[in-house]
Length: 449
Picture (tube, rainbow, N blue to C red):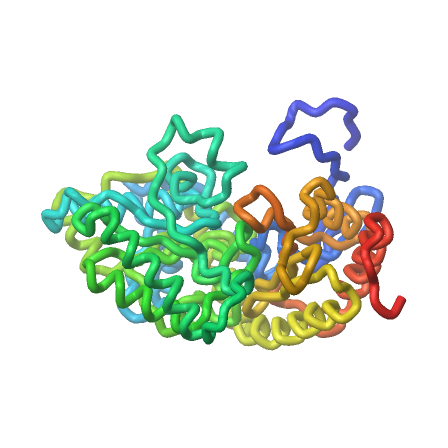
């Protein structure tokens, strides 16, 4: 298919070739050019493309029905998926509400939290504290929680902005604190903000356990996670984990909360939950919360496609493939290899200031000065340029501005969880070629060249 003028629009003018087919970690345009999906799309395609078992499960469901409205019928696909998902979550998180994407999952989570507070006689609680930078979605409710100025500020008059605390960007700190002390320092910002806002008004704290697009795979010190849980418990505040990007094995655990043994009150998931085979996400909560809502008349919320049987059949098959292929452990093992190879790049490229992440949620950040972590001049638009250089060479990576969306440049390297050591080397070869070209264009130093 060719067309000079398109009736379709998305975020910007960004010409791209037509996709012809995809298989495993590879994608092909209509000219036959091959691309390595080094970012799993937008950190979505956890099990790779065109998995035959998932396609077969979807075909079987299509032969039965593609839609059954939740007020009219229960469906085996949604019931089986809810049971399977609950079995893979931390103990106590066992009630599942389906949605079609990450923004819907976050919206549903905060509305669930609010309605639960009302059932508990705590109608004064409505503020949801989040972090800056962060990303929680593009709907107005989710955007109010998001700390990323270019996306949020134009809509300020249309939404009620929520209070923010600083994300735990310890890699930028130049102090004499230990990692443990830094983690506690950032966590205690939550306690200070709760007191400043008035504890009786604060409903919840929402956080990405490992940063996503806005902070580039940011991992806090271990001490941070338990302290946050402790603070929420102290004030009776709900802890919501936004696991839209981190969930379903991406970080080397089924959900990232498992790394620290944390049990959130509510978890939002999407992306890898159906791995791009169908639009699907979920909110998982404690039974006590859901039962309180149902006793009070029900959850005042819903979407037309919630629990769609075709999407749920895809989601169930994806979870089964994650288990069958051992993809959680493979993400951990391949993540160690890939993170090591990315860290090695720091010897060659002095302008790589940091490499971070867990499992196959990894990122590197470009800087002018590694000692001070001063960003590259924002006029270079490095976050766009390097992505384009890699794309031209057949590698897809994902980038955003690191410092609140205004400046800084980080790049997410997050291939499907099926990746092999040999395929990691394919990624690295193209990435090195792209970084070399970027350095030449911008007169940046390269060691050993």
